[in-house]
Image: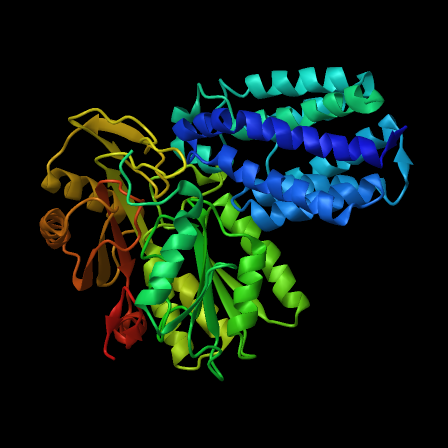
Length: 202
Length: 330
């Protein structure tokens, strides 16, 4: 079972990897976007870490709802509402249980991804974060490592696609040949699940 | 990188402190990033609120004042503001007559303004929205996020602002804003990339002797790259593309807009060519505005926006306005 500590570790792992990879995310965002994806997410996840220290919610659901609200209030751009909705919806789907099973998390995360798709109007193949999140959720039944691998593959697979949503879509065919920054950061978020699970003993 | 800044993290806050010092008619909330005309809320008037990423100055903060916006919400550089900012702005300027959000068509702006509208409506504020999407460079809108909002934002904010100042009701101000957007088309070219403070180097490489056609206002490349053209050739290309997209049916308002790093000497010369093409095509020009209004940091280049203006829109365009960047009649 996954307790509140697991979800705190997940958010901490996501914050650490966003900080570590901020420059790469921004570099991916410069040829097809506006060169700020890394710094925007960094600002958001720093706010998440601060809020979780201050409020210390006790259930998995409350942790994700608080994190999502922080992202919406601090990130801006499209990433703020989309990542915020992902975590909020996932958290709401978890309800107020003190512990949840991996299967319950998989189900809740699917609800979160559905929320992102409804809000942003993107489908798989549009060259967005959905291209990492959908395969990750599909693979989650086989464990966190499988989800991480699926998300990373999904992110890499955005390279040859032509963007149909978001700012990269304005470039038309010129968006082809660049890995999507949103799918890349989504893969980091999913990878955080495996890190959180690995940290269970410590 | 050579920029007149302290550190990239405080660029927006520093600019807001400087704006506050320069314009006593504005109330600038640096912490929450909201710029409000000092006498708001104005009794009996619909309040116009706009916003978007910073880096497009004077848009939007420079257009706050009587006859135009009541409040503006600047986001991080090229990044939409967050819903809290817009909801706070709406609460600060609503006189009970309702608030009109003017939103440029970018996924982030649309999502954040929609979330803000929900927050404001929870507080009992009536909210309507006009989406600006005038950029014809993005043609296959069925399969994309749609056309970008660029230069027409100025036309919408000025003309809807005048309608609001006359005391027209929210539905009417919204309808006028939508009409202005539907009547407007823009096309932009870049002669250089811009440099965002966060990245510190140009957002794309543009070799000497080439230009980008069909750019937006976020430092992104355009739809295609071509060998450098003369001012007259660019005017031919841009104006003909605009008129092809929307055949003229009335006199037009013309905005020849600099992207930030092109001098007025070049912009005025470019405007002469734009006027020549319009004359050749038999399109009467009602009013012309030349300058840096909807910019993209230090990008060199220009955009042309045309708005088909009937007598009512023209009357509202000519109505008095008093903002940092646009001022006439008062």
